Length: 316
Image (tube, rainbow, N blue to C red; front, side):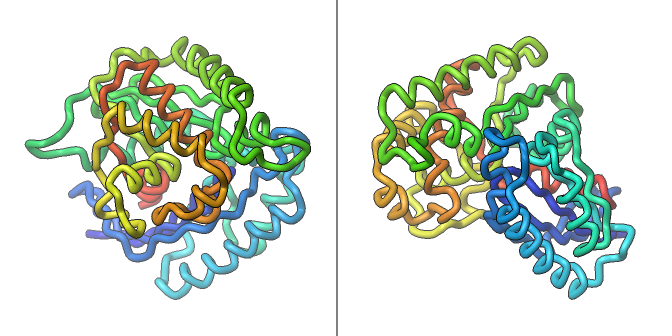
């Protein structure tokens, strides 16, 4: 028996909706509607500690769209779940966000902890890793978001997890802007500053999660899937082709170096590049590269299924 659910994942850079039919006994999830909007909710949060009014309005506009979709697909009221992550956890005015979401969608947004975020990501990314070509466990699932990155180690269940405050938006705003304007391209000193923050965060994560125990690295979220599309040479973004593709370390290094050396116009011309990722993809790619170098991973398995799928499974 299937249950129709709606899951919303509201992060620092994007807000995503999944309407799905979930069969808990079979362990399957069938997409009904999956969509994403770049709203940059975390705009300026690292600097000000507050959600900007214009960022809130962009997010509420996406919520109004999603409310229409949820109604059209006749999702029962008790099967809607809204999870908010890093930017909202950090914001002093997060109650403004909570009230706005409640008014539009009629549900109470859950400002989930880093540990909850990690568990949802692990479930979403690994539940379908089955069959004869299943990569070897333990898995290290890394979810590179806009404000934070989650590290989750496990086999069938989570053995260890840690969320650290490195993300593509946070590091771009912290180190790659000059007087509020994006460096085009960033200087070696700026790249070194981003790298230092990543390495500090990796050392912090390693105190909780034994990063070197993993046999398979699984990468989630837009920075990783965009690199997957670039690695495959796609002429348009194709989630089905990107899902479960594998990118070798040397290719990740080559793409990262090219992105960091490119101008904004050159990054914008990449066919799979979403407009909302043009400014932050360099930092996101560098996070993935440093994770692979730190863990000794020879490749990363790219997953289009992530925290959003985990939230949906937990809502059925």
